[in-house]
Image (cartoon, rainbow, N blue to C red; front, side, top):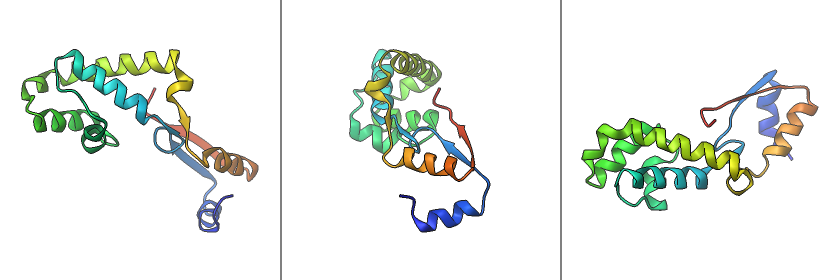
Length: 131
């Protein structure tokens, strides 16, 4: 069921844009595992889930990684941020293509909401930096 307040907002617009990660699907486990592996490949600190949520999740990854590495005393890895993020992209892409069902979880209510929009003839577009 779509809330009345949401319906009022939707009725004012003919189209809706959605970000993929965190809006329609939850990729938190995938992102955590990918960052943990990529950081470890460059002899960085062991990324905990708590640190991932505090420093990285939901933030621009270059800034987030820099903040995390500085907080953990690994300033020597900051010049390798591009390498670490490139490795993360490789790890994430491989996981998405080989273990999709393990990592990609549809956020509760997203399907219902999208079906409601389609039924009410709203245009829907997806924007993402995930893939």
